[in-house]
Amino acid sequence: MEQKKGEIIKVSGPLVVAKNMEGASIYEVVKISKMGLLGEIIEISDGVASIQVYEETSGIGPGEPVERTGSQLSVDLGPGLMSAIYDGIQRPLKSLFKESGNFITRGINVSALDEEKKWNFVPKVKEKDTVVAGDVIGEVEEMSIYHKIMVPFDIKEGEVVSVKKGEFSINDVVAKIKTKEGKERNLTMVQKWPIRQSRPVKKKMVPSKLLSTGQRVIDSFFPITKGGSGCVPGPFGSGKTVVLHQISKWSDADIIIFIGCGERGNEMTDVLKEFPELKDPRTGKPLLERTVLIANTSNMPVAAREASVYTGITIAEYFRDMGYDVALMADSTSRWAEALREISARLEEMPGEEGYPAYLGSRTASFYERAGYVECLGSKKREGSLTAIGSVSPPGGDLSEPVTQNTLRTVKVFWSLEDRLAYARHFPAINWLNSYSLYLENLKEFFKEKGGEDFAKNREEAMRILNEESRLEEIVRLVGFESLSSRDKLVMETARIIREDFLMQNAFDDVDTYNSFKKQSDMLSMIIEYYKKGLDLLSSGQSIDDVLSLPEKEKIAKAKFVPEKEYEK
Image (cartoon, rainbow, N blue to C red; front, side, top):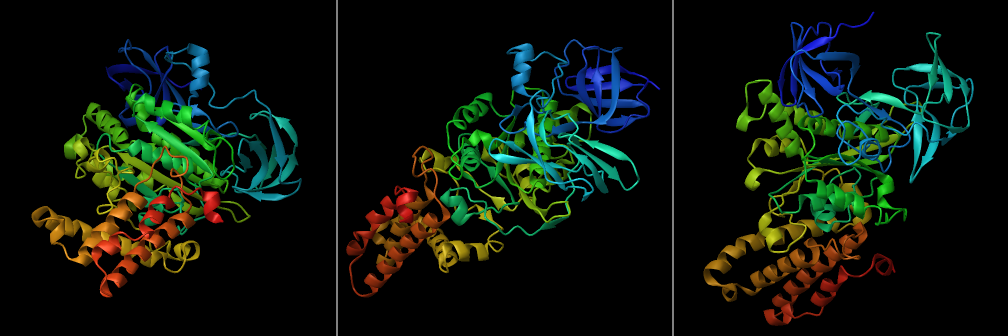
């Protein structure tokens, strides 16, 4: 029976209100007007539905039809995702350009994945094998990864009736499974998943492996685990995007999902220009081959901006379920929150703090809580991780504003960027006194194994020296450096070495842009050894001038420019 079409009664920017929508459900996708604009029901009462539209609504008015689809907003998951660039609702921008040129035609509908391309499917099961939800039935080699084709989660258990081998498109049947209920299911290489629903896992585990980023201030001082969550707040110009780019480039995650959510288009252009030219230090292949880009920049529809973070994290969960380590970058969640605020205002909801909706905290938490280190579904043990890192752009750098505070209540790593450091050419401009990581205890064994017995002590001593320096700076401002005791002068000099030779890192230097954890550990050890040797010399009667002119200082300054290969020797 054909569903009755709704009728538009009000249009307010990206919000459309329609009547005659009895039987529709929340988050159901609809098509607006004869142009077929894509929308999603976000509120319904007595047959009147409020719909957020993912395209420009100018020219649409009351009386036009609204057609229901009966399904939620979903993404297509299968071979062809790697190195793709999508908009906020998973429309491939390359295909959109071919169809409509530089300007996207409203109502255009293109497939998220290439339906014509043939993939070499290699089966991992055979006939009469028993499989359960999440089991890998075959693999497809896609760029730098093996794309695993899994049993859909709605098939709890079944028997393989047939499985094929060879070249197939994503919609070709590659296997047949007979369920416990006796029904036969045809399996293709593509599956759909609603973006607002997290994908199930067998269990979540305590994250205890470092997500190595190659950035000294992050890995050694404020580390994040594989499966962890973190945020990078900071004012305009403090380097949020560059920090996310650096983590995307050099982290040891298998796959990167980069979401440009409401930021400027030129920042996404930088990613597209740089990543194909840069080589992954582990595989030697272009970094773009392990990256999926979601681009919903500031000139794109507001409603699609709200959906883009869910599109990205659903794709990330899909790769995590294959057993890969996935790192997701959202730049920036402030723009996402602003989209929530605009939609909420048009719905005439009661505003919360600074006009944001009252449910901002729960929405923020529901996004970051989809991160984690998990045991994947399936009969064979398989572990994967999803690390979620979001930048926050508080107006004027005010960290007390709602988006930052709600984010900090959820995430466990806080990298506080300061424009004061950026203006002083100290990059990454992460404030070592305000930032923190709650994963230090989880990583204790990892640090002991990879950094040696003394790494934790050296890190603690370095942090103590930096804190003492901030106290001494007040005295220096009042009475001058020369009034300090010899020991305090050594503390100030050691703190300068930590800041300039360890915490500062040049993203444009081929050697300094990335440091292995072993190199970081040894550099920190050298600095603390210098400090201890200085204390010993002072206690034996040497002058502070002799201590400050020790040749070890020059070696420390040069250490970060020693290439990794030579360093290992």
